[in-house]
Every structure is written in C-alpha cells, then in structure tokens.
Length: 130
Image (cartoon, rainbow, N blue to C red; front, top):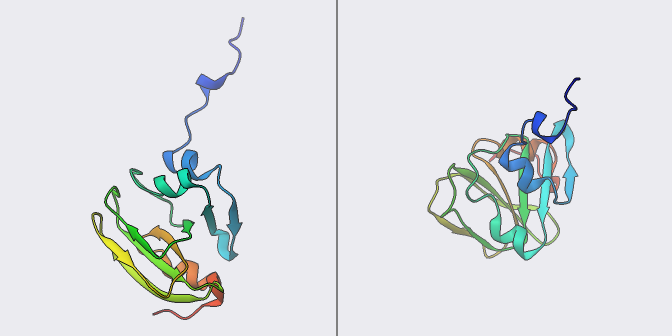
C-alpha cells in the first residue's frame, strides 16, 4: 500500500508567506507585490521578527512613523502622501531605529536595496530614482 500524500509531505511555506499571504495585495509591474496591512494585528506584526523578505514583496502601512526594533534585516521605506505620491525614500534603515515623515499618510516597507525596483514599477506614479 502506498502512503497517501498529506500535509506532512509538503514543505512549510516561508514565514513571510504565512504572514503576508492572508493580506490584500496589489500587483505592480515587473512581478512586484505590495501587501496592505489594514487590521490592527497585521499592522502590529508588520515585518518584525521575519528573517528575510523577497526583493519583489513589500508591506504598506497607513501611518506616519515606523520603528524597526524587532527587525532582523534593514529596510527601505517609501513614504506616500494622501494621494499615493512619493514624499520621501529612506534607504537601508537598520534594525532598532525609528523613522517618521510628517507629510506622509502611508509607508511602504521593503527589503533594503529594493526601493528602486518598486519606484521603477510605478509605485505612486513616481519613477525617478533619488
């Protein structure tokens, strides 16, 4: 008798996929994906505690400031105004830091070095590299 395939036969998805996979997402050009943290639990967890994030994934939070106290890797932060236009880009923000932008209404968090890909993908209508 052959064993039946089951849950134990499949490898577990990576931690980032388990965390972000349930959130609504917007597909951008070039295979980029921005997940939207809408609820308090999703916003509270954010990307904290994850070991890595693929370069084609990002998390959008509706806030004016973020901290990287529980991060294990550096982030690029893309600050957006109320219309979705890019206000500022903070690159390679290391763990255990606090950043804010008074003019922003939301922030896109992605792995350090990935901001240019999201800007080139047409995020917020902004395509120039700063």
